[in-house]
Image 1 (cartoon, rainbow over the protein chains, first blue to last red):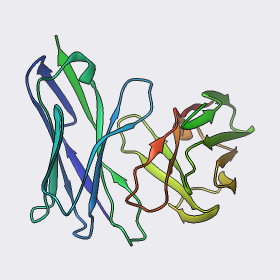
Image 2: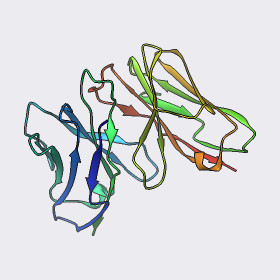
Image 3: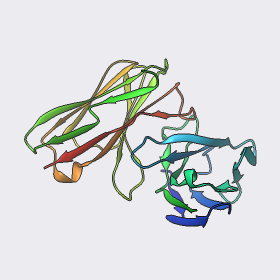
Image 4: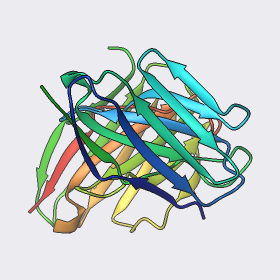
Amino acid sequence: GENVEQHPSTLSVQEGDSAVIKCTYSDSASNYFPWYKQELGKRPQLIIDIRSNVGEKKDQRIAVTLNKTAKHFSLHITETQPEDSAVYFCAASASGSARQLTFGSGTQLTVLP
Amino acid sequence: ETGVTQTPRHLVMGMTNKKSLKCEQHLGHNAMYWYKQSAKKPLELMFVYNFKEQTENNSVPSRFSPECPNSSHLFLHLHTLQPEDSALYLCASSQQSRTDTQYFGPGTRLTVL
């Protein structure tokens, strides 16, 4: 089945700096890659997603890039703010497959003021 | 209340107890999911229901028994649990397919003594 690896497991950045979280996946049939943010004590919430027909997607300070050849995708957060501090999860799935979303192990992002 | 709701939010039970977790979605979705979230582990998919029919059971022990009476409600019946079953149990829903966005409930924090 699908295997999603996420790095790093923890990341600390200074406020205003950029943060990058990377994920790799194993199933070349995967074509949907969402990113979720989970603040302490709260539910995971979708922040951005990308499908395999595009290589990059941006929403204000958040962007996701996808390299299907290398089977990896990354989350980029620019001009980080303390409220960006949370656990971020990547995931992958393939339409028409028996498999559901497979999640990465999460990255604890801390933005230092 | 809108979105996905879960009750109770916290539950402490003994190994011989029987309890149930409830999930309700107000989004008109047709697919519902149970996930287990343990510390420092990826989100683990437990069960999937599409149009009230169970479509996936990820080798979950029989002490966890799901029930989906309609597309809006999902239950997880618990009996004879083990301390290692202590975790956050998250419910999610999506429109239908595997590449649709999943919306999560706030979770039930379960502690098994």
